[in-house]
Length: 260
Ligand SMILES: [Zn+2]
Ligand SMILES: [Zn+2]
Image 1 (tube, rainbow, N blue to C red):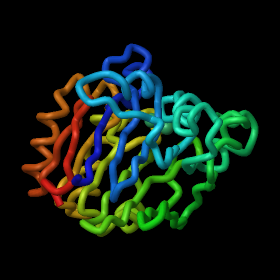
Image 2: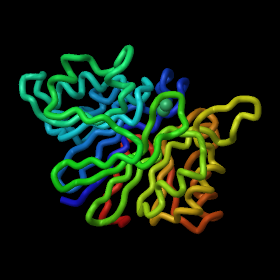
Image 3: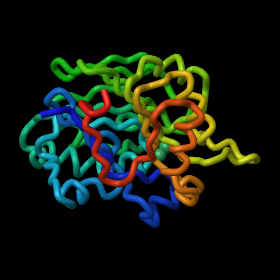
């Protein structure tokens, strides 16, 4: 079977999540025979069993938290419980930054942390493996919680997730070489009077223009993106950069052999 990514949810900001204007479920990746769930936000477990295609969390090989914010982590405990078959079978891996699992008020409960086969702490310049599947966390993002993006080095190409972050030129160096680039683009424009540590559309365009992936996918939308037709905005970025850019919708599946 080809590798694929399912965007179970595409909600990004507090009000989009709390009103469920888009689903806030996570992103399921099937890469080189491994099932990996990234950022199980609110509603992820429910979404696994909705729609035409059931994704059974008992089959997961790993759960990755990019950071501890609620829209990325609310369902992590129930999902890991499912992965470990009710915590009775020590199986599967959990990858998370230290402030999500170690310090004050960890978002993953201790009985859940101790139920996995391996708990690995994400760090800047980290590289990790699940058998023959490799990924890296090249840079710590500029975001209020300890946050990392993901760079999967697949046999067919490099698939990167630029998760929540403020723009920095470091992002371009860190994610250079990505063939498929998935980016959390929360804002259409920066707020003039507030330092919101998220990408806006122009920052995303700057990164796309510099990295020039074969496909860029925007997701994790806030209200200003949703109110302005993300699909149309993606078309504009395609025109401006000459790189194919799409806006994710809930339940979008990308089959990697079609794009890489
Ligand atoms: Zn977020
Ligand atoms: Zn966040």
